[in-house]
Amino acid sequence: MDNFTFYAPTYFAFGKDAENETGKLVKRFGGSKVLIHFGGGSVIRSGLMDRVKASLDAESISYVELGGVMPNPRSGLVYEGIELCKKENVDFVLAVGGGSTIDSAKAIAAGAVYDGDFWDYYEGKPVEKALPVGTILTIAAAGSEGSPDSVITKEEGMFKRGASGEAYRPKFSILNPALTQTLPPYQTACGVTDIMAHLYERYQTNTKDVEVTDRMIEALLLTMIHEAPRVMEDPNNYEARANIMWAGMMAHNNSCGVGRTQDWASHDIEHELSAMYDCAHGAGLAVVMPAVFTYNMKHDVMRYAKVAERVWGCKMDEACPENTAKAGIEAFRNFLCSIGMPKNFEELGAKEEDIEHMAHSACYGNGNTGYVGGFVPLGQKDVEAIYRLML
Ligand code: NZQ
Ligand code: ZN
Image 1 (cartoon, helix red, strand yellow):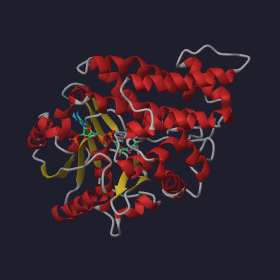
Image 2 (cartoon, helix red, strand yellow; image 1 turned 90 degrees about the horizontal axis):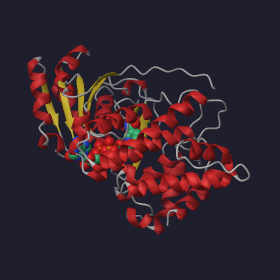
Image 3 (cartoon, rainbow, N blue to C red; image 1 turned 45 degrees about the vertical axis):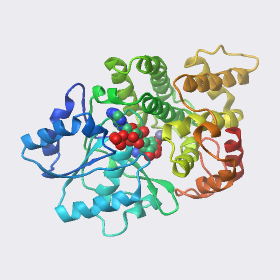
Image 4 (cartoon, helix red, strand yellow; image 1 turned 90 degrees about the vertical axis):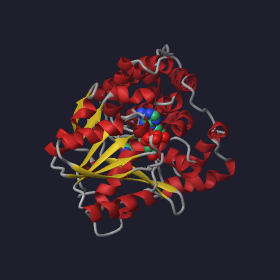
């Protein structure tokens, strides 16, 4: 196991009606003037917004609002939010929604206390200072509720970039599984896929002897395999929603990723797809992951065979572990199809003629210097070949 430090000081309030604690939590973490940030309106339609405002009112906390965050959040709204925060002397940013809203809120929080262009952070400048951020999560997926990351799409050129820094770690996150019961099945499945992707990205490691984190990842993958079909069958299954929601946080606050190298090739390759075609991040990952795993398999057959055996229940072929590794990738692909995820470029709406451009952008954007992936370094030609596997 490699040396590491781990500091993840988010306060979690989990369970039914937890959103009624919003006002108290904002106060606890020093907020007196709040920007409530939200997406396309699901939180208004569900009645959540009224409860959040009532909770802030009860603590005499004033607020301004900015809605309209789109999935794959855009830089334009971030600039608007920064202006609003400065004009209204906002001292706390509250995200009510999914990963897109939370990521947009984080970007606003950083830009509000920075004299330069917030996009500097998305070109590699570490985020050292931001207004405090709190979240009320409505979809289990991105893990932004416990992560120090944010991903924004720049409208000029439509490319997607990430920024990271401890200042982005939410001060508190409210996780009420019941809030996810209004999700359309497709969004639920996209979330499940993203959570599993965050686990696989960490599982693909070159670090030896990391049994504790291997076993944690395997446990979370097994949980997803058990709970996802239950929630697809009955969207109101609170217990299944609860297990998925906490797994989503655990999958990405890095408790399963410490002390080991990680991959993230699938994410870099996917971000080009969701930026270019505006598909859901999880749907893009469903198409990308089996292709990346197939391409990288020979690098460490036993790693893929191990997850196949322990998680997917494939029988280990001692004479030819490659067969086991392949069976595990196939089982994962079938699972994703069974919950309604796309399996190729066509189903995603992606086009073959864009492959070269996307491969170049993946390898040379986002601070990358010609390669993606920490498991196998993949250059532009490799990434092009991987996109072709998705045709
Ligand atoms: O905008 P509204 O009206 O709220 O509708 C949203 C949106 O259309 C809807 N939704 C969310 N909760 C709902 C609901 N509809 C009904 N009932 C509810 N309870 O779902 C749609 C998708 O929402 P979005 O926030 O985009 O989903 P997700 O959480 O999957 O976020 C995706 C974004 O996160 C980024 C992705 O790249 C993508 O931009 N990621 C962020 C990460 C991070 N910050 O750590 C890591 C991830 O790997 C990922 O890259
Ligand atoms: Zn993701």
